[in-house]
Length: 57
Image (tube, rainbow, N blue to C red; front, side):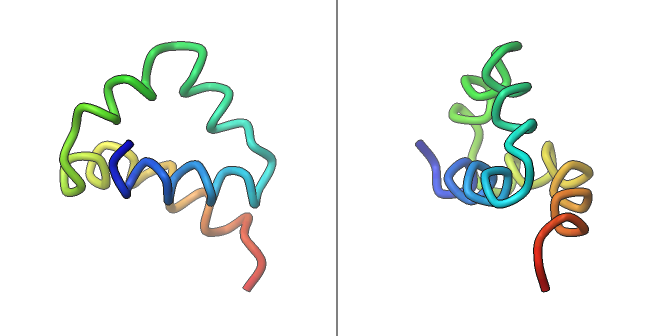
């Protein structure tokens, strides 16, 4: 799994974990795994911004 995917999964686990579940249920994890880091970040940037709000400072 690419490093960006690991970061996303860790951030999601630190919040409520819904992102991981949603990504697993509709095939996004497989699409993310096929992307390079830059593509993965661009694809997930809106969700990352929301996760950042949920994480402790």
